[in-house]
Image (cartoon, rainbow, N blue to C red; front, side, top):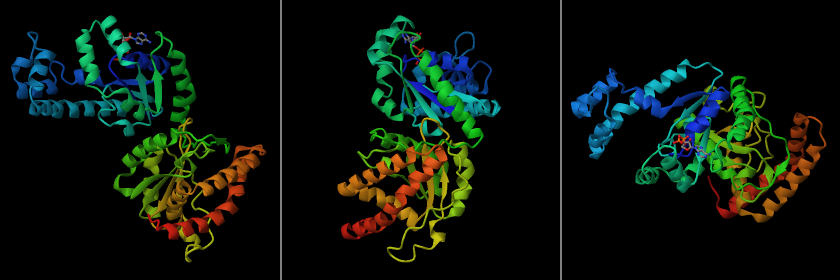
Length: 404
Ligand code: ADP
């Protein structure tokens, strides 16, 4: 199952987007709708609210009078927390019930108005954000929804601003245009990204990126941060640390468009224990690779191939290739990944040199007819330089006092 979080400010067009996704075949779970459902007349949820806030929260017909509830629940912090502690678990339980009932190959879209405010992005394979400038949202809320302008403005002010939302977005849908103008973009997203992403998770298929160089992309660190958020949620304290490594972690370096992340674990057993959860989170294992090539000794001892074992997972998201390396704390490969990144960040000459090596390797790879052949040619062309870089980087570490 692919889980998508959909959000955006009030009036941005979440309902409009989820309607198109639903027509395309997504299963929509609307958090607002569920929040209403769990306190409908006759529900245990409503009974609990009455116990806490009194019969005064009911309308004449016995249904919940939302305004009366709001007047009491938002009177003070204690009441607000009490309301949340009643409603949130009910919404959570009902949401889980729905999730458990959908088919294995579903694309589930959860429409959650306060996803960003609640810091929930990492729980989803992808976060979709619909954005529209605040003034235009006011116009739409007043115009088509008949909301009072002061009401629209205060609701907008109480939510995250667009910059905070943008930082959480894997996909930003700009809905400033005319009605319907987003539809073709949503259709393309559905068929080119969401459908293959779901199928890749189910079939444990990793997306391979061609070894072609992309210009340095200022979005890479943000993209890595979002992937790391998801990995942290999966690994919990089984990850000793999770870092963005590799070329995309070095500012201004053209690179193959693959985000490299290193999860540091206490032992390979921990890495194996994490394999299934990582796959379900959108990062299937690349099972035929279980070690890095040992580098020539610098400090002695590290040529033992047993110390170069690792596990590696890729990404199932067709639009965001990644390598997730699981390496053991203090083993030479784990240390070198962090050292290499820091050395390149610090040393402009090394960076320029690595850039030239990458370019040469990409040129060699471009002559290959198959993707597998191209990747192999790319990696092979870089290996001799890496052997030398291993020693140079450690030499730099000694000179500068670098440590993990
Ligand atoms: P949300 O669910 O995010 O609060 P809606 O999808 O209900 O937002 O959209 C808010 C209002 O704006 C609705 O009345 C909707 O019909 C209207 N709307 C949505 N997209 C557009 C658009 N591109 N141009 C003009 N109005 C729009």
